Image (cartoon, rainbow, N blue to C red; front, side, top):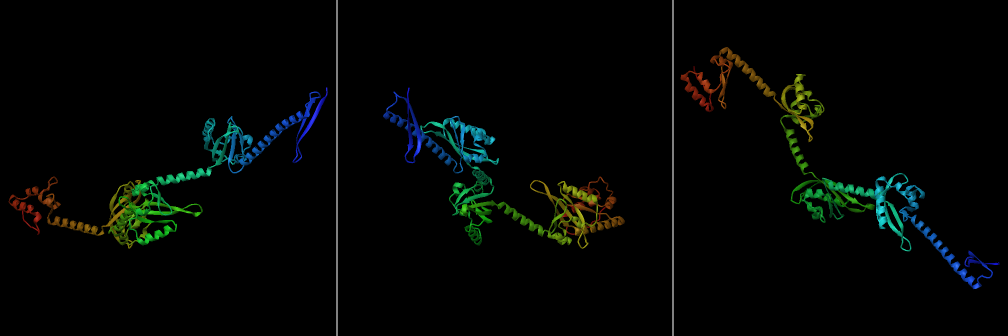
Length: 510
């Protein structure tokens, strides 16, 4: 049996390139005619050419996709019908520092933060089953080990026939955006929770934002104040010169700090400490003003009270001293200097013992210190020495000073010079002593009547003369019992008119 072989060469006339070689074998008798052979050749060549063209198109498409996928900063992935990832672009692999073999399938989940993994998988699988686009944020481990926030946007993938073949996703690193959002949230919460008034204006000074404290302090809600300027708060009591200076700084976009007087919605005037700063955007573009205000009305009132108290202390005709917890002087008023001769510079930081005349009774000072350190007030007298050596006496009240937490921070001493009073008292005591001695020698007694209580006190000599014992009640009525009956009417009339007497009265009685 004879076999015929026909060979045809398929080439490209344009470039002389051989595309294919076709061998046709047939038995001699059954061999096709020349025309049939040509038709057969054409059909086979068409199939080969179509397959070749499709193959080249696919290769070009894949190359084109790969080229596009590796452009820019997006991390791109694809997955098949089994939900397993079958492709990651070069950007993804460089970002994670892993190979395609490590990431393929479920390998990529090894880089997802453990706290985000369950949520990430749940979102992916649920949307995959519904063939719906999704967007989610999660943390992905970068090549340097740092977990970075990425936004992953996935979409269902279809072939040319409209058949679902999997998913494609692209991811962007949004860590900076996340941090910016967190910082913005912190600022927002800080503004909202601040006890101080905070508001923002546009470049024309129109209010566009106020925090809750604005309404608490001024009484205006955001809806009431929005679209207006801060002139609604102006009282007209500010000095024109100060206001013009404030306005000049305001227009020059410089930070301003100062005190003003503002008016509330109900007409109350408030002392306000205000800080105004320009808000600058990119390329120093002026966007508006940030205004922070603190209500210092109460502080101003306290300052006024302190100023009054300070002046009163400065002008007070008694010594006022303040010490720390160690007993060292921190303040002395001018009268202290006037009385002792020591200036404040000479005694600040020293102990009040600088005035001690001598060591004195140790128990006296231990009692004083124990009293005030236990939180109680101490009262007593000191015998002190002035700078010039002169002795003087002081009646003192020493008290602990507490802070707002109830903790002792200082000790306050208020001391009055009683030197002259002591001299008078000592002179009086000496006179009384001499009087008693004279009465003893002359057998002369005396008594003193209290007009309010109608009782009297007698000297020992009078008690002896009248035979008064310790159980006797010294009333005016009982005194009458000591007088002879014939003298009682005169004595009784005398006692009834004691408050009308202007001159000394003498009377002999038995």
